[in-house]
Image 1 (cartoon, rainbow, N blue to C red):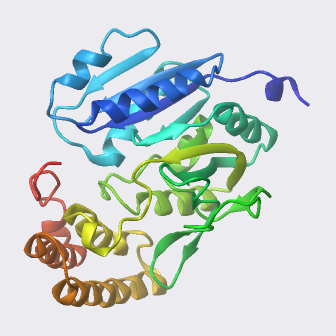
Image 2 (image 1 turned 180 degrees about the vertical axis):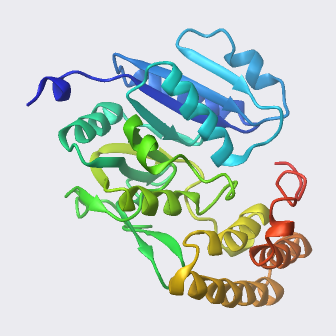
Length: 315
């Protein structure tokens, strides 16, 4: 093993916060409990509430920045990546605020990244937070049929069937360890997405730049909101961005044209579902979100003016 692989490099752990101090406190505690010898926790606060700043500012080992407006997952993480670079980090860990790292997760992610020089993204095994060893992600692939990432093992009980790590096509943005050198070659997150589907586009771009996306099953994470809410509970902003962003995943060329067709088809199917499915709360808001998502998927002029949180209620 080389000297570089033996020495833990500095990790900038980037957590984008949005209005939930309890979840933020929990994920920060899990990072600190991992006992990594050199981490810098970077909190980018997209919130409009003052409580997060009051709780986080001035804490040892935590670097806090509140954005002037909600910049979305992509814009906020890009600020965090810049801060990590300024702090001398060799790796950036993008980590959802509703996730919790199990013991040894950071060490397992970093060991895998340092053991494979071509690793561009290393991700872990992700459980549903409430389920006993219920999987949410155990590797993933890019579904060219629907233009989105798909998770291996979703909803399955973990019996070791996904304990062989290795290269995958897709890593969820819930947890991504990225060597800083990757950003120089592949760029940062595409801020046109704001949120949702940005992770699959980033994975595709990193792979085109000559890096590999690696699944490391010894790095275990639990994800509070990763249960994939059933049809009635899906929030309007998810419906909007999951439709609006689909043509951005791969732009141009024959497949880019197919993605536009798929966006239209999937959007119309969802409109029918949310129009007739029983028990949909706030049905009108969800139908409006889908209609705006379809409109903005094909209209760059309106796409970037209709941004969350102006579009929907906060929550």
